[in-house]
Length: 236
Image (cartoon, rainbow, N blue to C red; front, side, top):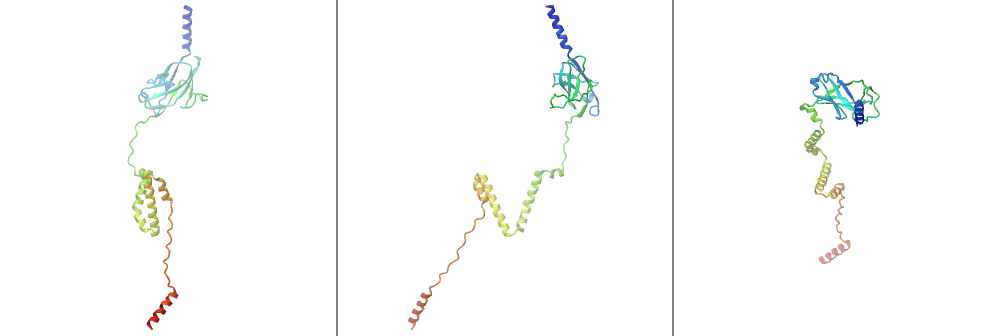
């Protein structure tokens, strides 16, 4: 029983011997000058399976990290940092290997670029949560396609009477006929009878039937002569 307890103790010691502390430091720059500007932040591995808070001097330590491959990121309210790939070896004497990592890319194969250890985290930019209210811009308003369509429609509505006065009578008549066809087509769409609307829209001008000239009855010359002779006999 004592041997079993000793074996389990040695096994636990050997198991914990493969876990190491991952450490690093934040390099202050123009995006984040000091800890007061950074605020409360921490470094996490793989979305929180291990973490370490950033101290006032910029240092951080993630304790007891087992051997494996991790993605390190910084949780900060006001600043953005690059993500890193951390390879923790199984040998206690070997330091972790640090590589750049792009979010959304596979971990394997690893990048050929290796970074120095301890980890150096550099603030890339400051988050901007306040968006200033845009002022009124007349030029920007006229760049809107909807506004241009409204202006074009208003100009056509105002200029249509003048254009109709300048049109040729035949062209004006044709325009009115086309306008009537379009009105009938819209009415047919509203009533649900699209087929008749299309047929009336596509139908051309039907030819007018030719009017037969009036025929005049010509008198028979023979009958006219007979009547004249009879009148002459009566007079005599």
